[in-house]
Length: 234
Ligand code: DER
Image (cartoon, rainbow, N blue to C red):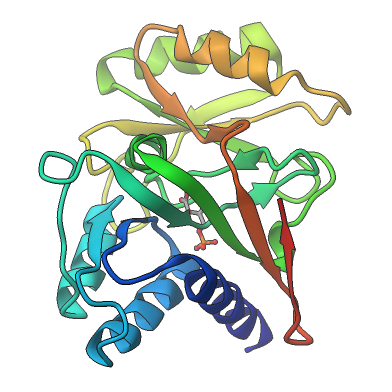
């Protein structure tokens, strides 16, 4: 389907430009990143990415890397990365991202922060003018102990509604790779949101591990379209 081809085009274009032999690479999570892993596997097995090192941002990504025979490391062995490539749920005109659709936002942000360069790969459905144009909620990772007060406090502070992300094939809430819960905050659809202030306030709230807001950290976005074209924004 066209959207899958667009994801693949974005992943391939980004990897071709930014991944090189010996690269210490942070690998994000989600269905777009799956095509990045596909690219890396082919290039690595063809001998054009020798000495590549991959640090995954989730259990799922680690499994994909291992199953692909790619060299996997972690932040204890490789604490400083050259490049990190990840997907996003929405990217606005300032390159602020909402991430966390896959519930991996905490490790994704840690690996992004450990990387000298952060690149986003996305199909055109992620491209927005303002956050909320297409993706109406912000994922927030929260410690189970604090989840109920946090769900009450967020709407009190910023409006909208907040609730635990419930699992599809398990009774109860989604549990992240870190053993936390995800609170999805459906934020009010007003034009100018001060995302920096919101992030600061949320990060300062006891029990909140992190949010899916990635602000002022994106170096380049690769948007791919159904016609096969890829646009980069820096
Ligand atoms: O959960 C995440 O942060 C993922 O990177 C998400 O933002 C993108 O997932 P997708 O590539 O499956 O749309």
